[in-house]
Image (cartoon, rainbow, N blue to C red; front, side, top):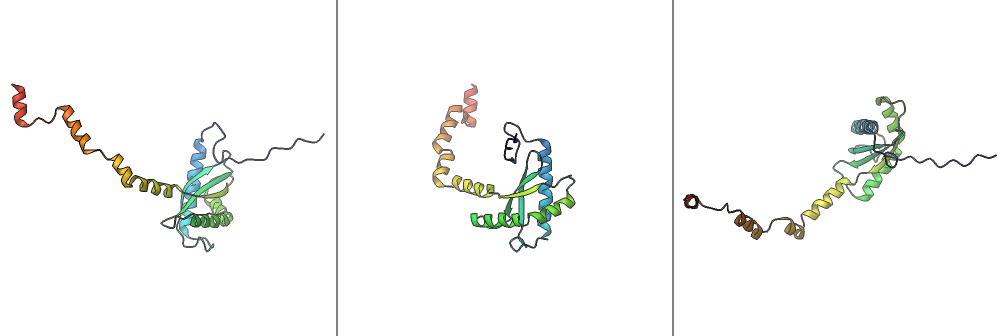
Length: 170
């Protein structure tokens, strides 16, 4: 009797559905991020797209079995265009075997995780939100109105002068 087909392996980059990320995943992810940052800082990469380019690793997410790691990368002080981000991710993927070899020398793990890379878009999103908050129509709604400030003072009765306090005490 033939065996039933096995389901395709799915490697989730976070905890399985309904489970939180374990402390070990967080600890190993932070260690991998630290090691990758050191490797990129050494500037020992031969890929022309990565040579001399300051690469920042902002986060590393580990799979639940620690066999896969996804590193979120961005150029430090560089272009934030989608094309530049795609080029950086593509170059990091090409350098992945070299990076794994370097990580094996520095990590204290039995198995070095497979590396995946994604562009970190959080800085672009933060800049976009900052621009939205600085738009005149948004600032108008965020800043207190002058009439409201005076109305709040009138309700408290705290605007008595020095002479008024003496009269109020009598």
